[in-house]
Image 1: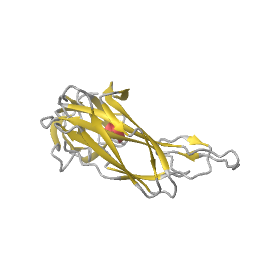
Image 2 (image 1 turned 60 degrees about the vertical axis):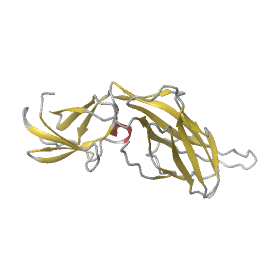
Image 3 (image 1 turned 90 degrees about the vertical axis):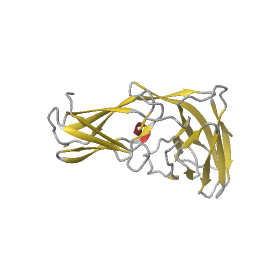
Amino acid sequence: MRDIFNKLTIQLAAASVALLSLGVPSAAGAASITITPVGVAVTAPDKAGNVSLINNSDAATRVQIRIFRWKQVDGKEVLEPTRDVVASPPVASIPSGAKYTLRLARVAVAAVSGEESYRLIIDELPPPIDPKSGASGVQLLLRASIPAFFGTKDARPDVEWRVWNAGGKLHVTATNKGSRHLKLTEFAIEGPSGTTKIIATGSNAYVLPGSSLSYESAEGAPDYPIGTGVTVTAAKGSPDAVRAMLTVTAP
């Protein structure tokens, strides 16, 4: 597997609303957790990988870990329960300042074919509330979702592209007919009017095998006539780097 996953530090506070969070009454502050790496890629014959959780807060933090099979259906993310991969342990208490190792293992009997995609969901659990304390308030709790892939050495992405103009934006469809995902970093369209960045964030930055996803630029993109030659670029500097020359089609 060729994705390079870096570490991620997640600080939760009242103003941190970009992350999915749950509100529960509590006197305690929310945790700050470093997750490294922020993705797992395991290549057969290996069957397991590790993720480290580091508690940067001044109190112990409890987390729940779940693993789901990750699919993309009609351009939307679908998470399904699975027993093919397990997370151990499913619940953990991490002391203040401590580093905790979480293990992901593929336990399915059948050998992996191509690539299997999963999502690891890590939820911070609320601390117990002492009814005698009289504490009140709202605590924002952590939820982190990171990708996990189990695949073979020969798995490769094979993506077909289509580009068109509509509504003042450039639109791109990526259809992955290969056996491995493609991560769309530095995603752009190069054309006669220069380079236009294409928006691909979160889980939508991954085009899974057998999936077709559509993307768009911000408004104000060049209005290229049908038949204009353009180049799709993505994943620069990686073994999966994309530089695909094609022409603009009708919407």
